Length: 255
Image (cartoon, rainbow, N blue to C red; front, side, top):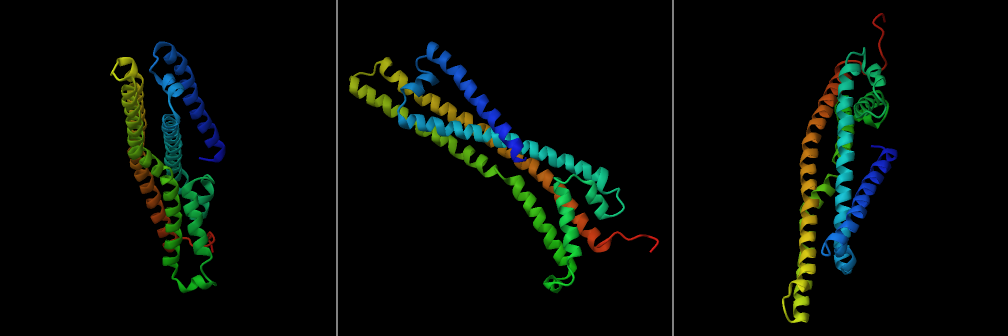
């Protein structure tokens, strides 16, 4: 996804999150004195920091999931374009020119063509043509793979750590509850309801952040595997054409 497309998606995600929070907070504060609004207004620095961290994790998770799903959809569309435009062409250069400039498949084809045409007359001549084109195409495949996997580490980190961040908020809320009991000298419900409610909210937010991250991570990894299979198969076919077919300029059958 280009930078121009990422900014509107991220802005929309942030706007949705803050709009929902702004809508829910007044109602919660009016109807429930121990809700999310009370947590934010009555919580100390640590409680607010934990809440902000989990909100950032949640927004980042949804942003990455949306952008990666769109990126994968474009790649699968490009794979269909290869079958419709690239393979019916007369030679590899013509087929590459028919593909979209942003297509990862065109990037692989152009890399292979460049590697084959600029092989002779340089230090690269010490490497045989097959090995040189193979390495060049493999580098382009690795580059595409790294782009597809971008952001997955964040999802994995959120999925594995957000429950513990929520658990930290839970422990901090229980500590406040025990402190309130010790100060009051009795375990009345009005003294412990607020801190215990804070603990439960932190736990719920931690789980609500972790579950989408884990599900999104698993789905993206599975879809990445299918997209990379298309990329690797195309790269192998391009390699075969460069070695066994047209390697340089298009040849006229009459010549």
